[in-house]
Length: 519
Image (tube, rainbow, N blue to C red; front, top):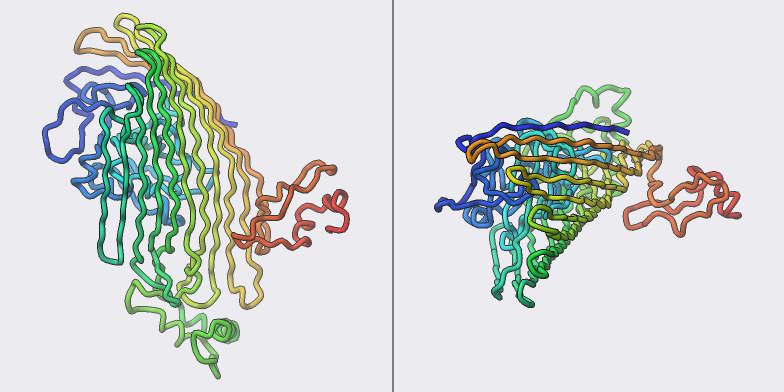
């Protein structure tokens, strides 16, 4: 359990508003409304280092993925996650979180229409359809007083395009090299006065930038995106805003190339026999080459995978592509009690899953293949009270979130020699609770004092089933009660888990008391 107290204050003048600026398409900039402090404000009056990228800038700068945003964001670096080609590593002021483990909180928080997204999986595609993006606000520096989670690097606050009062529709197609094509369709539909709906669909794909030994595409993409947003007002006091997004994707793994190896290790008599056995067994089983007559060492054949095109590798495990999805949904309710007080509720859910394989040695030999699976479901609720009394205005509230999920990695080393694989298998339960308040006291029209207070309780739980062997404990829900009943079914075979009862009995021997004949 971890608790944290955050106190923030600021003394600002209107002349210092230059800390906030907008990245646009070069046209004149009027008033830019941001929610950097959880309320709608003129960007030029917000004492926060914030950059805004709107939908026009996305189009003019040809920003298609979250990674492309770095061309419009000074001091921000965006790159593919090293272990997740569908994820993005965000680095602000040198702070980033390269490890996407479910027990690790990112240094930069990502919010989509007010809903916190704890995992980076699928983020790469979240800006794909620029017609459905309202704007992206990037806040630099620690964020904790007002935002859902404490982050030391900053925050990405992404808002989708809101429904408007006029009917409109669009269709767009894109073609390019590497067999790239993309089509998107969308419509804005006013249903009644102050009631509107936006719906959109997009499909895109390309063949990738490389190939493995079996011709499978590397860094290829095939994705579908669905987006919907419904907004309604009842008079001047009540408003409802609901948004949902679903992204399904298939990707070829990253291009990995064998750079070099140490020939001396293969010339050593103690290792020559092992090297020969690896090459012989793999070539015979795969049929990639004639059966070798005599390979006292593997120097010659390993040399053949070094050099040449960096986009052609000798790997064979990339034929199983990276598959996954990202789903987000949020419901925002607001009710204005009077001119001084407005109550707001933000309810959100974010689920994500991904499976894939990666050949880390980039050869057809089973030296170091890795299989991964991860899934996460996060629920959050934030209650706010926005107040204005005389020259004082601000917001106070409470926040709660809970994330449950699993993170599994199966790593094999020299499996053709009989070496058992090792499975890193964890089930996590992460919770965060907080109360917060922030107020702005306008001493004059040019001078404002801002103060904030936040207290956070964070807890993280992990059940680890790390073990030697090629099966996952995921989904078994090993009972701690000896009288518990085995949950229906074994692990999902779609991701390569074993249904061997011997394995079940190995990790849960007490099942033999409640499932006669199983163990």
